[in-house]
Amino acid sequence: MIKEYEDPSGQRGAVKLGKPIKVLYVVRPVSGGMRQHLIGLWQHLARGKVEPLVVCPPAEAEFFARQNLGLKIFPLAFREKFSLWADLGVALTLPRLAKTYGVEIIHAHGYKAGFLSLWAGLFPGRRYRLICTFHNPLRRYRSLLKNWLSSMLAGTVARTSDHLIVISNFIGAETRRRWSVPDGKISCIYNGINPWVQPEQAPEKARANWGVPAGIPFLGTVARLIPQKGVQYLIEAAAILRRAGIDFRMVVAGDGPFRAELEALADRTGLSGVLFFPGYLEDVSGLLAALDIFVLPTLEEGMSVAILEAMAAGKPVVASNVGGVPELVTAETGIVVPPADPERLAAALQQLIRTPERRRQMGENGRKRVTKGFTIFRMAEAHLGLYQKLLKDVT
Image (cartoon, rainbow, N blue to C red; front, side):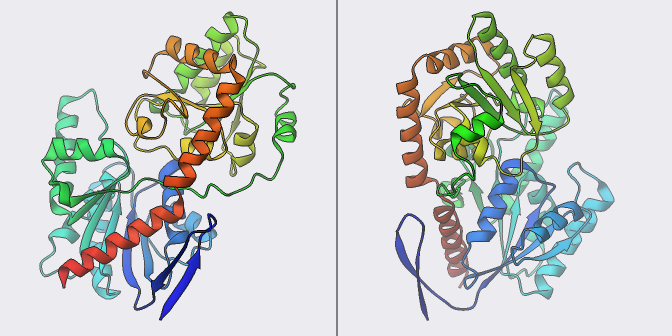
């Protein structure tokens, strides 16, 4: 049976319906971009072609259940940090679940999930394929021993998996170089979003709700508030702009363990009444529509969903030149600056604040770039094609 479809861009296609591929997704505690990646993937994978089952921690199980994604969910004691007995319980459970439910592919997301899937990958006589998606570059630690151990474990995941997915060419290059993984074992599938989502409020109304006067530049970021996102350098850059006599408003949307320190830094640098911390926003489309410039001062990044959403909203982007960011932000769509450099960040923001026409053109270019190559439909289609290819190679 052939089913025809049409995505919001008007592109038509057809898929042959048959027995769905049973995929067991292994998910560690998630937030931010990885969570959006997974939800988008599960929403847009053709249900006639893929039957998703999910192993995840209880908190994520409750969240995913509320999304009504039609998932079969197995809550397990899956922790972010290593825990011998909890991790062992998850690792031993995966092959049993795969056998019980006739799973054809185990798809782990992230290094920790990949590590706990190692026993499933080494399980004698397994009849499923093992995939792991690397969402971020391997984190660097101050401890040489910790760096060596994390690299060794990640390398074992890379060698044991039947195939690896990376969400940027930067991560792909690091994976090949660090663990000598052959090209044919790695697929780069970029994150994708639905760029046709419309904000509930017009930009003018959204700006008014944020208390931004007409004609005043409105800057902002959306990030989990942890040191690695570099928001501390954005605050320092904002203070530089203030000292230069530039009037603006700025919002830092998101939450996390670093929030209190960031708020204290904003107070110390004289940004009270100029910089706002609204916390976590369930829907950021209204905020993005209201912004003049989107900023991501991150210190490490795989492929930022927040940047994709800002570009889809037609906003110019100023971001750190790290990870997969330069694969998104080009000279036509924004400005990349060195990480942890508030002076260069402030200079880039000042350039765009003073050139409204350049901002407008960058925003238009960014939206075109996302709608052409970074949609959720393309991402889901690429995953399905890889699943089918891997299973075909087995037969």
